Image (cartoon, rainbow, N blue to C red; front, side):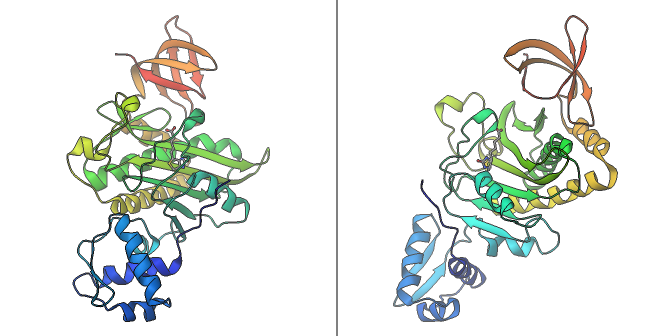
Length: 331
Ligand code: BTN
């Protein structure tokens, strides 16, 4: 098994130092002294950052200068935007990881606090729903997981998934102006293609939820989608015609998650279901094909139950609650 180390805190400090002094050349010895490493380590890390596409001018004899603020998701670059709130007060960053959900579940089992975030620039084994692979190209998307410890019963897990869906919808609209649709339970779509996916996993006893891990993947600056996914997936950049700041989108996601999680605790799942109905075209009157438990059939949507289940009407007139499975729009 490959083990991936989290990003060294001193490397995070190096990026912070360069970012705070972006217009000036910072001498190598000064950097080394401030972050507490040798000058050769500074040089080594600068080279690694350059490999990741961070634009840094200069060399060991003259010092270093950022020519552009890097779009990395390192804690020091996110923290200024996350001063208030519980979600994201601790961010564990990886340049490369198998899956942020796997790490977050492990950290949760070891006692990680509510709101702990695990974020990676790249995943080698990103997971989607139904055991699918989540394409996690380096530095193009956002791949993160958050540990939540809700004071609620395990039956609330599907509602947490809806919370994440409506929060992500609001965050993407706020950060990019693009209004995504939500396909039940929580796929975010632009032009009918998936741009964001959410995977909720949890550790619980029958009547007690220890921790829920919500993993969110957003296709942000992908310029190309792999051939086999092209008809069903897209990226914000392909839809909006621009390059977006991943850091800005991630901080918007955390703020909206905080707000919608608060709404769930204060007003209950009905309030979340109402928000979901407001922003999703899948809530009522949508002709869908359902794939659930090995069977496949067509139906019309007739509402969203506060439990998170989708209300559907089969073509023979029977009404049902869909609690699990997958749906697609019938054109
Ligand atoms: C889906 O739509 O199938 C869910 C996709 C969830 C992907 C994210 S990326 C961050 C987190 N880590 C994972 O391995 N999966 C989730």
